[in-house]
Length: 103
Image (cartoon, rainbow, N blue to C red):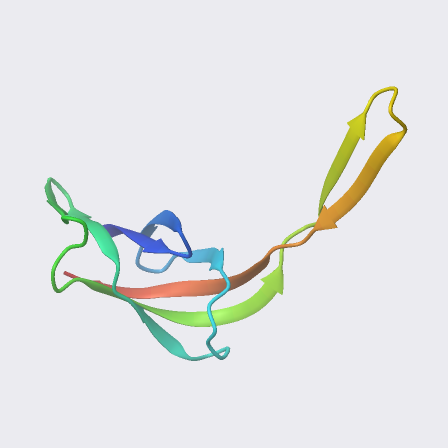
């Protein structure tokens, strides 16, 4: 069984037992969270598509860790104008383990 969920403004295709990194969720490490914005649930040939979410469907996940992604470098420059700008960014994430998908 698999599902497509929406969290943090992004969509993820998940299955039970997978570890994924999503946008930061304010939850303690080791706690269980319920993701209720399930856009699609599929099992074999049968697929349920929500409008926009599947009614009564939810995903239970446990929080494994919090962290920060690798730094990306932003460099802006205008030629012949003596303008250079260096900037860096590290996005926060939460790593979760998908425990169960209920439709």
